[in-house]
Length: 519
Image 1: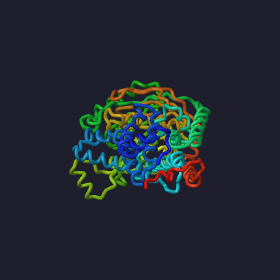
Image 2 (image 1 turned 90 degrees about the vertical axis):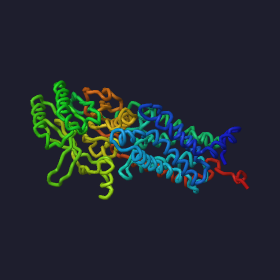
Image 3 (image 1 turned 180 degrees about the horizontal axis):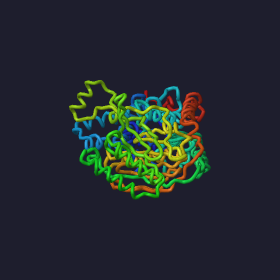
Image 4 (image 1 turned 45 degrees about the vertical axis):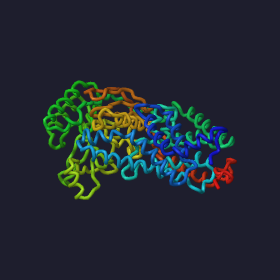
C-alpha cells in the first residue's frame, strides 16, 4: 500500500497499521512542545508529517479515528491548564472539573477527526497529492473553522509556534493561518519523501526550496512606518492571585496597590492597568475614579484601566476598559468566554450550575463598530483577555490605530503554560499588524512587544511590577491587515482543486497498486 524507501516498508507498515492510533496520540501529545514556553518550533512540521504518514493509506473511518487521537493527545497536554482554572481556582469538584475539561478536549479532537475524514477523499487517487496538497489545505481550513465556530478556540493553531522561527517573516503577509499552511506544506514535503517516487520527492524538495527562498526575502522587512512622537508607557501588574482578587476585604488594598504603583511613574505618558484591575463595578467606585482622573490631568498623563460596568437602563454588566484622564473613551469587550462570561444554556441548567458552585450570570458583549481609544492624537486598538487570540477582530481597528493594547487576567491558570501560550498569541498580533503591543496583566505575563513580535520588556509573574518602555506608534497596513485570511483560504481551495483535478498520474505515481491489494 505504501511506496517507501527499500528495506523500510515492512517495519514502517507494521507501525502505521498496527500501532497507528498509538503513534497518532503520542505525536499529538508532543505537539505543544512546538509552542511557548518550550519553543521547539521545528517540531511542528516533523510531527505533522508523522500524522500524515499515519493516516495515509488507512480507511476513511480509521483516518478519522487517528486524527481524533492526534487531537486528543495535543489538547490534553496543550490545554491541561483548563483543570487549574475550573478546579484549583474555580472550586469545582474534581469529577465535574474533569468532565468539563474532557468535553472541550473531545470537541477539539473532533475537528482533527474531521480533517482525517476529509483528507481521505477517494477522488484524490495519488497519495503524493493527498499529502502534498490535500492534507495541508484541509488542515488549515479546519484550523480556521475551529477559530470561530461555536465562539472559536484558536489555541494550538500551528502558526503560533513559529513566532521565533524563520517562518514568522510571513506573518505580516498571510497571518497565523497562512504560516500554519506553510508548516503543513513542509510537513507534506517531508512525508512525501517517504511515500513517493523520485519525481514526487523532487517536487517536495522544490517546495521546501521555494519556501526557504521566499522566507529569506521577507525576513527583516518593514511593513509599517513611524507615526508621530514616541510615548513613554507604564504597564502596571498587581500580582494579585485569583483566590484573593475578588475578596471584599482586599478591595481597599488593591486600590492602594495600583494607586501607589501609578504614583511612582510620573514620567509616563500612558499608564495601563490590567483587566478588572479594580474588582468592583465602576459606578460603585466613582470617587476613586474621580481622584485618579484628577491626578492624571494634573500630571498630564492618561490612564487606561479595566473594570466591570453596569448599564442601569438595560440591567447589563460589561467587561470594560475606561480612559481616565483628559480622554473619556470606553471599550466594552466583544468576544466573551463561553461558560466563563456567558452561559448559552436554558434556565434549568443555570439552576444546576448554581447548585454546583459554578458561575451562571451573563456578561453582555460590547457592540461591533466600537471606536479605538484615544491618547492625544494616537489611536489604540483595544482588546480584553483572550480577544487578542482573534486577529480578524483586531483588524477592525486597523490601520487607524497606531498601537495595540491588551489587558488580561491569566491568574486563572496559575503557574502553568497557559500565560506563555497567551503571550505568544499577543506577540503574533504585534507581528501581523506591524505595531507595538502593550500587554498589561494581573499576574503575568505583562510585556511590551515590538512590531516584529519581539519582547522589549517583560515583568516577572506573580509580582507587583511596573513594566516601562518607550514605544513608537506606527502607520500603514501590512498585507494581512489589508486582506485578512482571504488569500490563505483561497490558496487552500486552489490546493484542494489541484489535488482533485490533477492527482491522477501527474506525479507519475498511484497510491495503491492493484497487484499490492490483498486477495
